[in-house]
Amino acid sequence: MSVNTEPPLTIADLEATPDDGNRYELIEGELYVSTSPSFLHQQILFKLIKVFADYLSSNPIGEITGGVGVIFDDFNGVIPDFVYFSHERRKHILKGDRFCGAPEIVVEILSPGASNERRDRQVKRNLYSSRGVHEYWIVNQESRTVEVHRKRKEGGLEFIANQQESDDLTSPLL
Image (cartoon, rainbow, N blue to C red; front, top):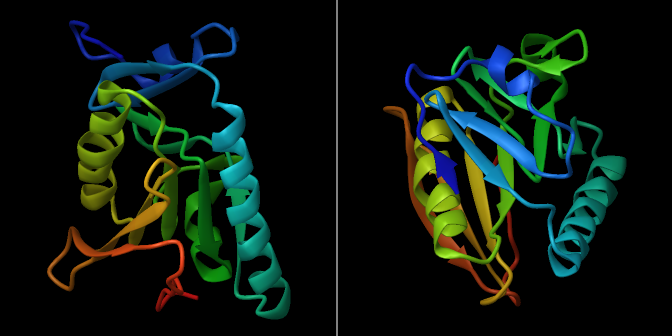
């Protein structure tokens, strides 16, 4: 669900939202509210994080974290399900204890509902595309697929593949 406001909201407004169990995100000054993730959503998230963590344990090239706020500017702050960032990138995007820039990989697990799907597939994809995210993975829990969008040389994200459950999911970043 999005809430239209005039004038656009800022990160300061976002930080003043209540701690009521909802997730509040700001995209182009527009407030988006979603409820806490479902049990299945969190199970998928845990399994993905475990796979990443196992890989990064053997190949210590970067880090992952889940549910962290990513602030791009005064009008854009989101909470992806989890992100990957290289050690080099960390130096540029971590300011104190805040992410203030694009991680290399952003993963979102679709929540049920047309408005949630629209937000992840269109609104967030456009935001990540324009802010320098290298890969955006959209996990569809119903179809058990991962839609991969990758940064083009000329900028922006393009659809690469819709990975099935039995496929090996790879990334040139890892």
